[in-house]
Length: 77
Image (cartoon, rainbow, N blue to C red; front, side, top):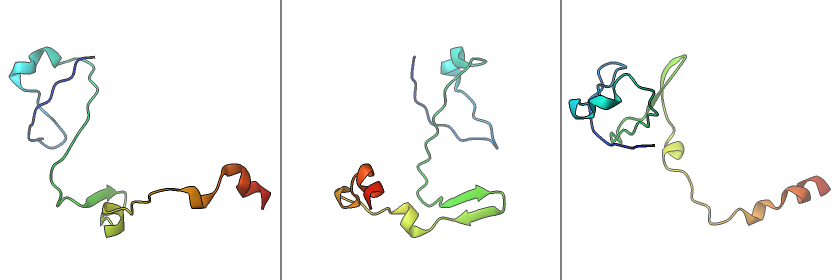
């Protein structure tokens, strides 16, 4: 698998491949999209766009899940 990286402005739902990567046109591609815009905090849903809760954007970091216990211990109770 060959990987390339480039930045481009999307046009609606289309992303144009730069001319220097013309060999990738009209081929099956695996695409990963990254967006730098940190201010973009809306998620589209069937009911329109909703603002994500702050806790979702800044999750808690937990050092360990040891206090939860093991799977077998859950069924012994």
